[in-house]
Amino acid sequence: MQHHLHTLLPCCKEATLLAEKQLQQPLSRWQRIGLQFHLLYCHFCRRYVKQSRAIDAHMRWMAAEDAALDESVKRQWEVMIAAEMEK
Amino acid sequence: MQTEAFHITVPMTTCNPKEWVKLYAEDLFKFACSKVPDTVLAQDLVQDTFLSGLQAMSGFRGDSSEKTWLTAILKNKITDHYRKSGKTVLTLDSITAHSNDPDPHDIYFDKKGHWRREMAPKAWKQDINDPSEQREFSRILRTCIAKLSGIGKTIFQQKYLEEKKSADICKDMAITTSNYWVIIHRAKLQLRACLEKNWFSN
Image 1: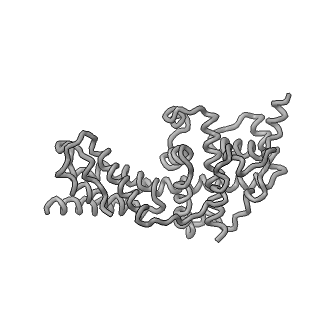
Image 2: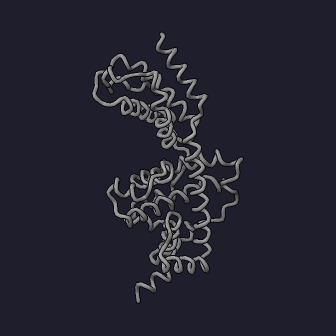
Image 3: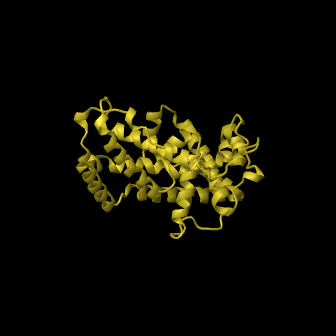
């Protein structure tokens, strides 16, 4: 009983942890209900969830950006290395 | 300051600079991107790494792989860069001031687990996914990631920049899933606070 009460009424610390978890995987039903309920009355945590989701979206954008090393840069480096080796 | 590439040695037979770009450029670039705040700088550092590698090549006589050797040179370049620039652009004073707390979560939450008033999320005025702001935001975000503490930084980078699966991260780092969530949670709290302080307060 104690456990369920706790799950249904998470504090901000627990709610934000649940929110992080939810960004990566589905929550159990009770966790989901607990989080939703908390977000109904807590505007700080609503903000947190929104911002955390935006950070994640930006991280994905950044990861895609990083992966794309321009082909022209690579060709430039190949030319540079060849020239250095001539010396 | 000269990078000390000469102390790191590699067998002559495994060195083939003509293949370097094809074999290692992507990985070195990715590594550099995870350590410095912008991609142009990351490119410069990789280029310097290749040049130093060429210069140091004649002195090779070690036993590490070519890739390990180049990565070590790149690491030195990154260290040199930070030593030379010698500046810490961003401040985390409100966070580090509490760094002696036994539980880092206590910085953000009170005993009942509610947000501390001064650390509670503020409304963000700008949209971080606005194309005209994205690059500057990336720069600040990278600097904030670099400031994360120890294991939090490693896990955060693996999860988000290397896009590794959380199960694999737990296995590789030998941590339990519940520890994983605590670490991710803490890292995100730190990151969010750092961003708010350095981006939205301007």
